[in-house]
Length: 279
Image 1 (cartoon, helix red, strand yellow):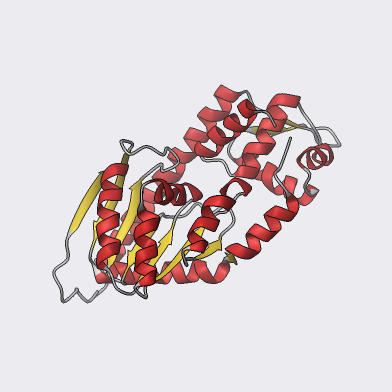
Image 2 (cartoon, rainbow, N blue to C red; image 1 turned 30 degrees about the vertical axis):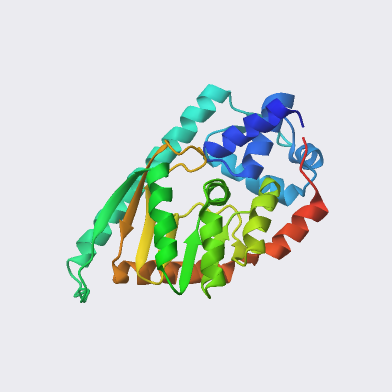
Protein backbone atom coordinates (compact mmCIF):
# COMPACT_ATOMS: atom_id res chain seq x y z
CA UNK A 1 0.00 0.00 0.00
CA UNK A 2 1.37 3.44 -0.95
CA UNK A 3 1.93 6.14 1.67
CA UNK A 4 -0.84 8.30 0.21
CA UNK A 5 -3.26 5.35 0.34
CA UNK A 6 -2.36 4.72 3.96
CA UNK A 7 -2.88 8.36 4.88
CA UNK A 8 -6.25 8.44 3.11
CA UNK A 9 -7.41 5.37 5.04
CA UNK A 10 -6.16 6.87 8.31
CA UNK A 11 -8.21 10.00 7.59
CA UNK A 12 -11.29 7.87 6.93
CA UNK A 13 -10.80 6.18 10.32
CA UNK A 14 -10.43 9.61 11.88
CA UNK A 15 -13.75 10.54 10.28
CA UNK A 16 -15.46 7.79 12.25
CA UNK A 17 -15.15 4.66 10.12
CA UNK A 18 -13.73 1.45 11.53
CA UNK A 19 -10.46 0.24 10.05
CA UNK A 20 -12.29 -2.48 8.10
CA UNK A 21 -14.85 -0.01 6.76
CA UNK A 22 -12.12 2.42 5.69
CA UNK A 23 -10.16 -0.29 3.86
CA UNK A 24 -13.23 -1.64 2.06
CA UNK A 25 -14.58 1.78 1.06
CA UNK A 26 -11.16 2.84 -0.23
CA UNK A 27 -10.89 -0.37 -2.25
CA UNK A 28 -14.23 0.28 -3.94
CA UNK A 29 -13.43 3.95 -4.45
CA UNK A 30 -10.06 3.25 -6.07
CA UNK A 31 -10.72 0.07 -8.03
CA UNK A 32 -14.43 0.31 -8.79
CA UNK A 33 -17.52 -1.84 -8.06
CA UNK A 34 -16.99 -5.41 -6.90
CA UNK A 35 -18.98 -8.38 -5.59
CA UNK A 36 -18.23 -9.61 -2.04
CA UNK A 37 -16.14 -12.54 -3.30
CA UNK A 38 -13.62 -10.26 -5.03
CA UNK A 39 -13.60 -7.85 -2.09
CA UNK A 40 -12.79 -10.71 0.25
CA UNK A 41 -9.94 -11.77 -2.03
CA UNK A 42 -8.56 -8.20 -2.33
CA UNK A 43 -8.74 -7.57 1.41
CA UNK A 44 -7.51 -11.06 2.32
CA UNK A 45 -10.45 -11.80 4.59
CA UNK A 46 -13.66 -13.85 4.72
CA UNK A 47 -16.85 -13.12 2.79
CA UNK A 48 -18.82 -13.07 6.05
CA UNK A 49 -16.52 -10.34 7.34
CA UNK A 50 -16.95 -8.39 4.09
CA UNK A 51 -20.75 -8.66 4.33
CA UNK A 52 -20.73 -7.29 7.89
CA UNK A 53 -18.51 -4.40 6.86
CA UNK A 54 -20.63 -3.64 3.78
CA UNK A 55 -23.75 -3.54 5.98
CA UNK A 56 -22.09 -0.87 8.14
CA UNK A 57 -21.07 1.18 5.11
CA UNK A 58 -24.54 0.93 3.56
CA UNK A 59 -26.01 2.10 6.87
CA UNK A 60 -23.64 5.08 6.76
CA UNK A 61 -24.71 5.88 3.19
CA UNK A 62 -21.22 5.28 1.78
CA UNK A 63 -21.83 2.18 -0.36
CA UNK A 64 -24.69 1.18 -2.69
CA UNK A 65 -25.60 -2.41 -3.67
CA UNK A 66 -26.78 -3.26 -7.17
CA UNK A 67 -30.23 -4.72 -7.77
CA UNK A 68 -29.04 -7.56 -10.01
CA UNK A 69 -27.53 -10.90 -9.01
CA UNK A 70 -24.81 -11.46 -8.00
CA UNK A 71 -24.88 -8.21 -6.04
CA UNK A 72 -22.13 -5.74 -6.88
CA UNK A 73 -21.23 -2.96 -4.46
CA UNK A 74 -20.27 0.56 -5.50
CA UNK A 75 -18.62 3.30 -3.45
CA UNK A 76 -20.71 6.45 -3.20
CA UNK A 77 -18.89 9.56 -4.46
CA UNK A 78 -16.59 10.82 -1.68
CA UNK A 79 -18.24 14.21 -1.04
CA UNK A 80 -21.71 12.65 -0.95
CA UNK A 81 -20.49 9.79 1.28
CA UNK A 82 -18.86 12.14 3.78
CA UNK A 83 -22.00 14.27 3.94
CA UNK A 84 -24.03 11.11 4.60
CA UNK A 85 -21.63 10.10 7.39
CA UNK A 86 -21.96 13.54 8.98
CA UNK A 87 -25.75 13.28 8.87
CA UNK A 88 -25.50 9.83 10.48
CA UNK A 89 -23.43 11.25 13.34
CA UNK A 90 -25.85 14.14 13.74
CA UNK A 91 -28.75 11.68 13.91
CA UNK A 92 -26.92 9.63 16.56
CA UNK A 93 -26.21 12.81 18.52
CA UNK A 94 -29.89 13.78 18.46
CA UNK A 95 -30.80 10.30 19.64
CA UNK A 96 -28.32 10.61 22.52
CA UNK A 97 -29.84 13.97 23.47
CA UNK A 98 -33.28 12.35 23.55
CA UNK A 99 -31.99 9.52 25.73
CA UNK A 100 -30.30 12.05 27.98
CA UNK A 101 -33.60 13.88 28.44
CA UNK A 102 -35.38 10.60 29.15
CA UNK A 103 -32.79 9.72 31.81
CA UNK A 104 -33.11 13.16 33.38
CA UNK A 105 -36.90 12.77 33.49
CA UNK A 106 -36.59 9.31 35.03
CA UNK A 107 -34.06 10.50 37.59
CA UNK A 108 -36.60 12.95 38.96
CA UNK A 109 -38.83 9.99 39.87
CA UNK A 110 -36.05 8.09 41.61
CA UNK A 111 -34.74 8.54 45.13
CA UNK A 112 -31.02 8.53 44.52
CA UNK A 113 -28.85 8.74 47.61
CA UNK A 114 -26.79 11.92 47.47
CA UNK A 115 -23.07 11.65 48.00
CA UNK A 116 -21.93 12.36 51.56
CA UNK A 117 -18.94 14.23 50.21
CA UNK A 118 -18.84 17.52 48.38
CA UNK A 119 -18.15 16.91 44.70
CA UNK A 120 -16.74 19.29 42.14
CA UNK A 121 -16.89 19.45 38.36
CA UNK A 122 -14.88 21.22 35.70
CA UNK A 123 -14.64 21.20 31.92
CA UNK A 124 -11.31 20.57 30.19
CA UNK A 125 -11.05 22.37 26.86
CA UNK A 126 -7.76 21.34 25.19
CA UNK A 127 -5.56 18.26 24.91
CA UNK A 128 -2.81 20.24 26.65
CA UNK A 129 -5.08 20.89 29.63
CA UNK A 130 -6.15 17.24 29.64
CA UNK A 131 -2.52 16.10 29.88
CA UNK A 132 -1.81 18.76 32.52
CA UNK A 133 -4.67 17.42 34.66
CA UNK A 134 -4.00 13.71 34.04
CA UNK A 135 -0.32 13.60 35.06
CA UNK A 136 -0.66 15.06 38.60
CA UNK A 137 -3.88 13.07 39.14
CA UNK A 138 -2.09 9.78 38.42
CA UNK A 139 0.72 10.92 40.70
CA UNK A 140 -1.75 11.49 43.55
CA UNK A 141 -3.74 8.23 43.40
CA UNK A 142 -2.86 5.04 45.27
CA UNK A 143 -4.83 2.04 44.00
CA UNK A 144 -6.24 1.72 40.50
CA UNK A 145 -6.69 3.49 37.17
CA UNK A 146 -9.28 2.23 34.69
CA UNK A 147 -9.50 3.73 31.21
CA UNK A 148 -11.45 3.04 28.04
CA UNK A 149 -9.96 4.89 25.04
CA UNK A 150 -9.38 4.48 21.29
CA UNK A 151 -5.84 3.55 20.27
CA UNK A 152 -5.05 7.24 19.65
CA UNK A 153 -5.45 7.80 23.39
CA UNK A 154 -2.51 5.47 24.02
CA UNK A 155 -0.50 7.40 21.44
CA UNK A 156 -1.15 10.56 23.46
CA UNK A 157 0.04 8.93 26.69
CA UNK A 158 3.21 7.80 24.94
CA UNK A 159 4.02 11.15 23.32
CA UNK A 160 3.33 13.46 26.26
CA UNK A 161 4.89 11.74 29.28
CA UNK A 162 1.84 10.04 30.80
CA UNK A 163 3.35 6.56 30.44
CA UNK A 164 6.34 7.49 32.58
CA UNK A 165 4.04 8.64 35.38
CA UNK A 166 1.93 5.51 34.94
CA UNK A 167 5.06 3.36 35.24
CA UNK A 168 5.97 5.07 38.53
CA UNK A 169 2.40 4.51 39.78
CA UNK A 170 2.64 0.77 39.01
CA UNK A 171 6.05 0.59 40.71
CA UNK A 172 4.38 2.05 43.84
CA UNK A 173 1.94 -0.87 43.77
CA UNK A 174 -0.80 0.68 41.65
CA UNK A 175 -2.87 -1.18 39.09
CA UNK A 176 -3.83 0.04 35.59
CA UNK A 177 -6.35 -1.59 33.27
CA UNK A 178 -6.99 -0.35 29.73
CA UNK A 179 -9.63 -1.20 27.13
CA UNK A 180 -8.97 -0.15 23.53
CA UNK A 181 -9.47 -1.25 19.93
CA UNK A 182 -6.12 -2.61 18.72
CA UNK A 183 -5.35 -2.42 14.96
CA UNK A 184 -2.13 -3.71 13.41
CA UNK A 185 -0.74 -0.16 13.40
CA UNK A 186 -1.30 0.05 17.18
CA UNK A 187 0.79 -2.96 18.19
CA UNK A 188 3.87 -0.93 19.11
CA UNK A 189 2.09 1.58 21.34
CA UNK A 190 0.12 -1.20 23.08
CA UNK A 191 3.32 -3.16 23.67
CA UNK A 192 4.80 -0.06 25.29
CA UNK A 193 2.11 0.09 27.98
CA UNK A 194 2.21 -3.70 28.43
CA UNK A 195 5.94 -3.45 29.07
CA UNK A 196 5.44 -0.99 31.95
CA UNK A 197 2.96 -3.34 33.60
CA UNK A 198 -0.45 -2.17 32.45
CA UNK A 199 -3.16 -4.72 31.69
CA UNK A 200 -4.69 -4.11 28.26
CA UNK A 201 -7.63 -5.71 26.50
CA UNK A 202 -8.98 -5.39 22.97
CA UNK A 203 -12.64 -4.52 22.31
CA UNK A 204 -13.25 -4.77 18.57
CA UNK A 205 -14.43 -1.53 16.93
CA UNK A 206 -15.42 0.02 20.26
CA UNK A 207 -17.31 3.27 19.66
CA UNK A 208 -18.71 3.92 23.13
CA UNK A 209 -17.86 6.59 25.67
CA UNK A 210 -14.24 7.49 26.35
CA UNK A 211 -13.44 7.72 30.05
CA UNK A 212 -11.06 7.09 32.91
CA UNK A 213 -11.69 6.33 36.60
CA UNK A 214 -8.98 6.82 39.19
CA UNK A 215 -9.17 5.23 42.65
CA UNK A 216 -12.91 4.70 42.12
CA UNK A 217 -13.54 8.41 42.71
CA UNK A 218 -12.00 10.76 40.15
CA UNK A 219 -13.53 10.60 36.67
CA UNK A 220 -12.47 11.94 33.29
CA UNK A 221 -15.20 11.59 30.69
CA UNK A 222 -15.04 12.77 27.06
CA UNK A 223 -18.01 14.95 26.12
CA UNK A 224 -16.83 16.10 22.70
CA UNK A 225 -13.36 14.79 21.92
CA UNK A 226 -11.55 13.79 18.74
CA UNK A 227 -8.26 12.55 20.16
CA UNK A 228 -7.36 11.12 16.77
CA UNK A 229 -6.03 14.62 16.12
CA UNK A 230 -2.89 14.39 18.20
CA UNK A 231 -2.00 17.99 19.03
CA UNK A 232 -1.65 19.68 22.42
CA UNK A 233 -3.57 22.70 21.16
CA UNK A 234 -6.43 20.63 19.76
CA UNK A 235 -9.81 21.73 21.09
CA UNK A 236 -11.62 19.09 23.11
CA UNK A 237 -14.22 18.86 25.83
CA UNK A 238 -13.88 16.56 28.85
CA UNK A 239 -15.66 16.45 32.18
CA UNK A 240 -13.53 16.13 35.32
CA UNK A 241 -15.32 15.25 38.54
CA UNK A 242 -14.60 13.64 41.89
CA UNK A 243 -18.17 12.36 42.31
CA UNK A 244 -17.93 8.80 43.72
CA UNK A 245 -21.43 7.87 42.52
CA UNK A 246 -20.54 8.70 38.93
CA UNK A 247 -17.25 6.85 39.40
CA UNK A 248 -19.16 3.77 40.53
CA UNK A 249 -21.31 3.92 37.39
CA UNK A 250 -18.28 4.21 35.08
CA UNK A 251 -16.46 1.44 36.95
CA UNK A 252 -19.43 -0.88 36.47
CA UNK A 253 -19.48 0.01 32.77
CA UNK A 254 -15.75 -0.68 32.51
CA UNK A 255 -15.98 -4.07 34.23
CA UNK A 256 -18.80 -5.13 31.90
CA UNK A 257 -16.70 -4.21 28.84
CA UNK A 258 -13.63 -5.86 30.37
CA UNK A 259 -15.43 -9.21 30.60
CA UNK A 260 -16.38 -8.97 26.92
CA UNK A 261 -12.92 -8.04 25.65
CA UNK A 262 -9.83 -9.98 24.56
CA UNK A 263 -6.38 -9.86 26.24
CA UNK A 264 -4.06 -7.61 24.24
CA UNK A 265 -1.40 -10.32 24.04
CA UNK A 266 -3.85 -12.62 22.27
CA UNK A 267 -4.96 -9.86 19.90
CA UNK A 268 -1.35 -8.94 19.03
CA UNK A 269 -0.51 -12.58 18.33
CA UNK A 270 -3.49 -12.80 15.95
CA UNK A 271 -2.49 -9.58 14.16
CA UNK A 272 1.12 -10.71 13.73
CA UNK A 273 -0.05 -13.98 12.19
CA UNK A 274 -2.29 -12.09 9.75
CA UNK A 275 0.37 -9.49 8.92
CA UNK A 276 -0.34 -5.92 7.78
CA UNK A 277 -3.38 -5.68 5.57
CA UNK A 278 -2.89 -4.56 2.01
CA UNK A 279 -5.24 -3.58 -0.79
